[in-house]
Image (cartoon, rainbow, N blue to C red; front, top):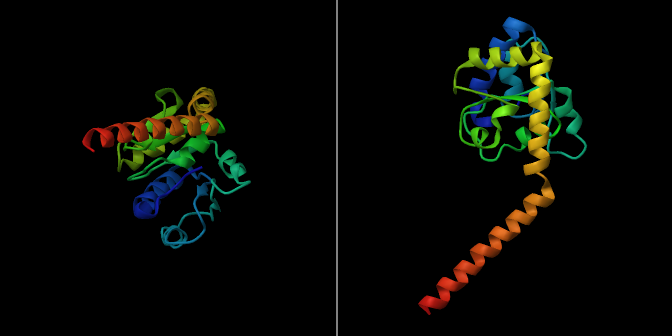
Amino acid sequence: MTQPTEAGVGAYVGALVVDQAARRWRVVVACPDHGRLPAALARAGIAHRPAYGWPSDRGSVDLVRRGRCGRFPSRWEGLPLTLLEALAVGRSIVGTDIPGIAEVLPADAGVLVPLGDEAALADAVALRLGDTGQAGREGDAGRAFAEREADIRRTHDRLAALVDRVANGVEQRRSRTS
């Protein structure tokens, strides 16, 4: 399973060409089937039409499960929800070492590679596809992390507590200056 960002379509396609040329992987792409990506993949001569879908849509967690390893060659990210979804279903992760991915990915759940190093990205994915034991251990660690840290109820509780603290702090500051 792999996810491009609209801003990084060129780099994404370049990395995918390296991956497929060397290894003939089948790819599940976690993005809508529109925009610049399908045309860019066709121009690059990608050997098959990837399965497209958007993991955050209701009922599409099966898309994330279809992949054996999550591949995130992003140039930038905010909070990478697709990465969290891949962790939650127990997929080992290979991502670029950028803010967002580096902040979310636990060290024992996958690996970070330098931004722009398509060969390192492909090699890291190949290692996980070839060593199911390592990929399984990383997937288990990712699932445990997601259950512990990314549960929606806990996230809402933490967010509510943070908003409460900030709101109370703002109220205290206002009362001192009034």
